[in-house]
Structure formats: C-alpha cells, structure tokens
Image (cartoon, rainbow, N blue to C red; front, side):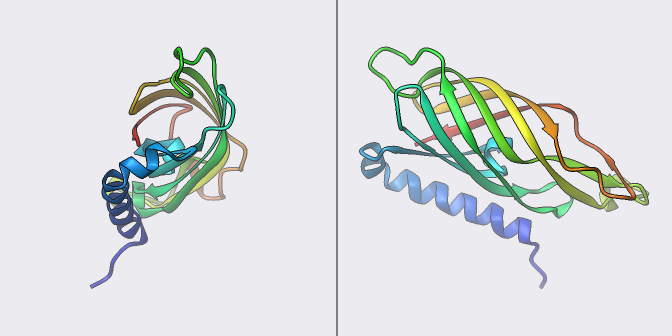
Length: 168
C-alpha cells in the first residue's frame, strides 16, 4: 500500500490539533499561539504558530500539506501587525500579514484531465488583511509569486485567496 506524503501531512495536522486541544491550559500560559487551518498561512491544510512579542507585532510560521495534486509540503514564514489590539488583549482585532513561502500552483501543460494533472508549487510574497478573534481568524490574501513558472507548466491559481483557522 502506497501512502502519499500529502496524506501523511494531513494526518499529522489532525494529530497535532487534537494534542494541542488537550494541552490548552498549558498553552494559554505560553507566549505562543498555535493554530490549525486552511490557506497560505497554514501551508495549505496544516498548522501555524505565532509568537506574541509586542502588543502589535507577531512573528509567524506555518507548515502543512498542499493537497492539490499531491504536491507535498507547503510552508510560510513572516509577521503580522495588529492595527489596534482589543482592549487588554494582545493579538486580537484587525491585522496585516506579510509572508514568504509556498503561495501558488503551476499545472502541467501535458495534463489531459484535472484528475490526472501534475502540479508544482511556487513560492513568493503574500500580503493579507484580516481579523483575529479569541480563538479564530480570517484573512483575505494577495499572492505575488516570485519564483518563475516551471517549463511546461502554467500558473493555475489566482492571485487572491482566503484563509481561516482555529487558534489555541
């Protein structure tokens, strides 16, 4: 039985999410926020960690599975700037996100059907505008791939994306 790498990452993300949920009291005292979600900040479908440095600036990193076409690992690193944190709360409210990492797909020109298409990931800069609640977040993202489209491939994703997740 052959298991795809993307399937392993998806299973790993679920296991980490369940483990994080069970450890929530200890995480609440930590300067880090862990999350699971869907979108570029999570490396596709995966997890994200955010360090609560100052009241407005938060370095962040994400890793996950780029499940489209079984392309494997997705990742992103960057920072978030919270415009006006909620009273007495760090890292809640409107925010601007700046990331670098996996943010686009290229589809093989030789593919006949979408079900048998080959995809490759592309890296670049992602700029996002969103909001962070007590345990959830939502972002509208603008993707600017900086890597070139591989020979024999065509960029197959848009330049605007959404992401959402659950933070612990």
